Length: 261
Image (tube, rainbow, N blue to C red):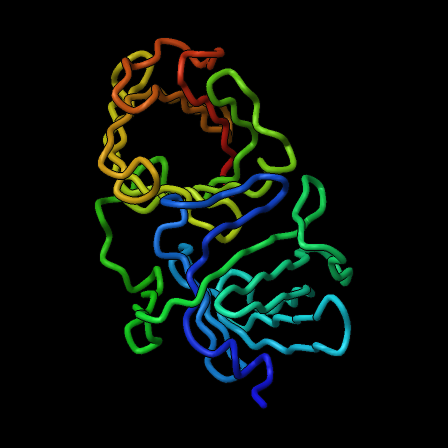
């Protein structure tokens, strides 16, 4: 009789991702998937590649899963979790804080948990998985700019509604040349190429989305640096450029503040 680890072998597409009470699904997940070969796992299509080993215990209910990361941003960390395997559907809930294992399949705000629902992907094999190129080996998209590097989100207001602080702490943006990628935890939310003009008042920035739910769309915005903070206000895709750093209900604008990490 096949055990659960045998039944998990292969590639699994991420159908839905919940963290800190925020749910991501559909097109926003792009090609995100988890691949399992033997006792090793690899999470791809989520920005950086996350790799490590997993151990299962189905003698308890809910079943336990322990994931130890040995490559990627989480290298050296261990996540305790629970899982449910039902035919072609796999549910995994992991704790990202300390040594407390989740008791239920949920990732409410403040829980520090990540809850994934996956479906077996029969068309994707590990041999076809692209290997992430180390940052030092990549050809630069363009010369470095004042936006270069990793930025931690400080606050965000979207269409006049502030983002919950428990969700804000998960969000980062990584800029390389004229390309920036926004992540919520391990999940890539959007990728954009941008141009900017620091001679105008306020300074202007324009984005063209190359990945994510707004792929192919353009956004106009303004930006400014205040000490070690970056403030950015962008219009909704196709909207007129904002004149001020604010987002009010119904204007479709997104106003974010970032601190260099």
